[in-house]
Length: 280
Image (tube, rainbow, N blue to C red; front, side, top):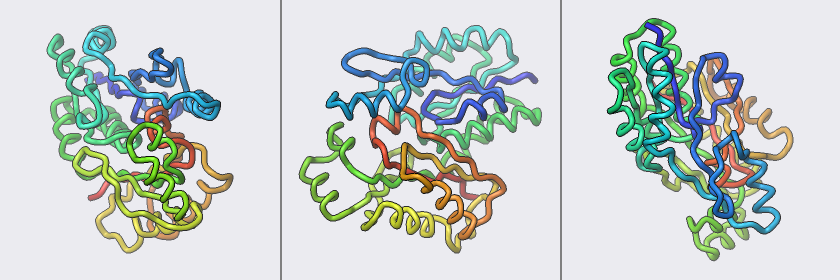
């Protein structure tokens, strides 16, 4: 069967990866000063950083509506035998519900809740593309993706809480205290929801090394197929150190580095880095 894989823009897959696997990305909306712009088409993360750095308000995200999904699915459903679409976790956005509503208009569109965000979703998108290439039936692919979703391990460490404070996700007092104490919180995705995990203390680079070690060292439950290093702008050379740390503490067949898109950038700001992989 000729199956098309689509995903919303929060999956943070690079243009090189989407081209390699023939994946179509559907953009969410990023709202800046009241104007909605298509994610990664009409706005990129650096636009957000420039805007906030110049004193502008924090940007927000808006879901793809059902009408938009129908417009995206319609030509693809005619061109391909089936379309499998993956969304950001339904606990983060109404994208999944809207995609389900749109899919009711077609008999060959399958919608999967990734229960994740960023390349946590991206890991599932790549698995879907590979299963499609191997000739799996669309219903079977959707079933396998739903089973894999709880096994994705996604987390990020944030250097400063300025963007979370500006977005109302933590108080000014908490942000000030964290900055004064050099606390770098780890944000984890658990059961499709975002939670605050361990708070690392010290220089960002040292915290990142400790974070990678604790995530990977002496683990026997990791699927060693691939891991993502996903980040917003970070200190020069840091991602090379993270790659070396990954190779020190674990083995992966593929280590992929990607830049976080507008969604992660809007919420977390510069100086955010995570490693994302799948458990066995």
